[in-house]
Amino acid sequence: MNILVINSGSSSLKFQLFDSQSEEVLAKGVCERIGIDGIFNYKTNTGINMRESIPMENHTQAVHTLLNTLIDSERGIIKEFREIDVIGHRLVHGGEKFTGSVVITDDVIQAMTECNDLAPLHNPANLVGVDACRKLMPDTLMVGVFDTAFNQTMEPKAFLYGLPYRYYEKYKIRRYGFHGISHKYVSQRAAEFMKQDPRRVKTIVCHLGNGASISAVKYGKVIDNSMGFTPLEGLVMGTRCGDVDPGALEFLAKKENLDFQQIMQILNQESGVLGISKNYSSDFRELKDAEIKYNEKAALAREIFAYKVAKYVGSYAAAMNGVDNIVFTAGVGENDSDIRQEICDYLGFLGITIDEVKNREQKEAVKISDGTSKVNVLVIKTNEELEIAREAAAIAEPLLKSQS
Ligand code: ADP
Image (tube, rainbow, N blue to C red):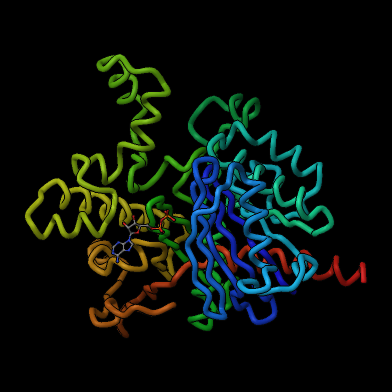
């Protein structure tokens, strides 16, 4: 089966075309600056690699561009649209309604639209992508894969805030956790790599990218995730603040005469390692370079980031009464060996020891703990698109078989 994976954001749309049997990526790309001017990036497994300005006024035009390129006689990788069996869409917020992936129907779109105020930045953009695909390929099966679904196994003790219960009942204010597609892929890949049964291991996944979250996956199910009602909670991130006392925000709002919108702008876009480093950078590579040149605030930002990750890892080891695997993934987790070492230095109490040579290896999957370590520490490249393709294939296969 050929599965097209779509990840639609507000002004960009990423796509990958998979052969589900071999899990090979046949083509992939990004439509950027949708609604502004339009840039189209496209690569195939046959060696085509292009970046072109193509006007894309809206998401429908972006989908049009990518589909027409896929069937183009020179650049294309398939002959006709019918060769795309399924489209898998990354959907950010499924609220409590969606605990797994689903076939996208009118009812699903209606239910997702009802979740829009839970994720006003992401869900509407996802739905625009779905809508564009449905317009152009109305007969193609579409599967929605939610970033919150894998976290839906959290129990009330983990997902409820210490707020009046009525606000959960009335508005579903609770912790949802995010990056579920990555946490699922990485925790399962770790068990596969270590030749373990995922239903028998306790894994902590540290997804450390520009957005960062940690999950505790016990016997294959998430019992906790550091992100909350929104992706603001938890770790200090590239530009997001992570955990903050709400009392400090009221104090700040009064002192600086700010409204909620302005406060949220500060928490989402001006905080994290960017804010701590006095706007030096949200990029960990630049912070490292600055640290080497004795930029104290850049060094402090990295130190706070690592300390917070270690605190969450410790608390999740407690929540699971032990841990077998700790896995680093995403941009920072996969590439920054110094941050990994710093984090693991805090974790000696768990019997963790790191092999410095292995820690510098760059592979799809590598065990960086040494032979004496009581916990396996791994670095695994996340692959959210492949996870979406797998979920879409699992749902589509029986349906398409029964139709043929
Ligand atoms: P997101 O998907 O949340 O945008 P990514 O997982 O792509 O984030 O991670 C992006 C971040 O990864 C960048 O902000 C950068 O700080 C970090 N990063 C990428 N490569 C390296 C590297 N070689 N060393 C340290 N950090 C890196």
